[in-house]
Image (cartoon, rainbow, N blue to C red; front, side):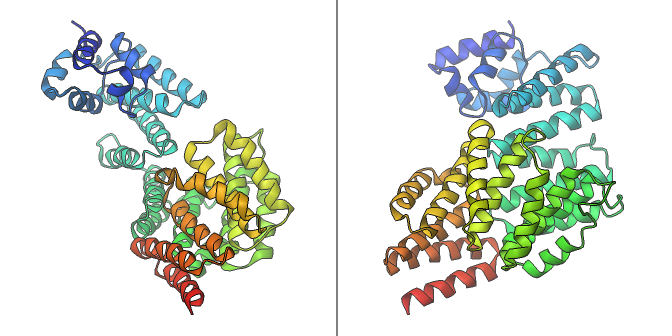
Length: 408
């Protein structure tokens, strides 16, 4: 009897729905494909289903029909399904389909296909905010015998691992991984996408940790400009975005405005809609943190609102709600600010490290605006503690200076 039929019988006997069997890791659609015999499980899926069903892993393994080492059509079909799910912006299905395709590619020792599908799985998991799962995939990639040890591929994997570490509040680790990504790419051409991307990730790691002078040195050393004919406009835009971010954090507001204005001209929704929306959310947030309230902030919030309604995750939409709350606080619309902050607080478990600290900071600013120094100090202290635990001592000290000013 095939795996799918046995899985369905075991699920029904256990009294589980397909959603309960997937437990948020595998969608109902994918469970259905498995039960109808249109997919075979990967070893990780078998582990998951055995745990959910309370069964021995080996028993489930007996049901599996392993992929043939020479079944090229099976790999082609699996890769098509994964890419189609990605194109349809179904991250949950893309992650599962890519996991399945990567498993077939590994059995066939097809390194390029395994790399592509493992990377798609990791990127889909990151989009779903399943960062621990994505990190496990990337670690397997880094340690696999199929990993082609090129400088570019090492840099890409290390860069993504750095981004995950930063988003989970492990700032020292994020910085170490970012430096390794830069070192791996150092012999690539100056304008190689992997080399520039590693630099952008290092700038972000330094900025969040509070090492703004070094971040500025890295940002201003980038050899990209608007009049560089050999550099794609998207890379110029990302460079301007990175430089602008550091400038705003350093209080160099006019430089930040110029650089973000350049990025806004080059990042077009028809070219990369998701990146366009992400930039405008980031730009609004950084400008607000720098004390900027102008039409460019309103425009960025509006653009991000349009974009994230279509392509954003729930976590990204919460981050935008947080930016709207910050804007409301700074324009003295405390009624709107309270409502927006309440929405974010109710789903704070979906926030990454940076958004979580920004939430506590915004709550501190909100209560300070209301004249409640005690509550303001509490939330600013919480933000300082998060930064301190993550290794951003300078940021923690800045916040505690605000607390002392409130309680003096």
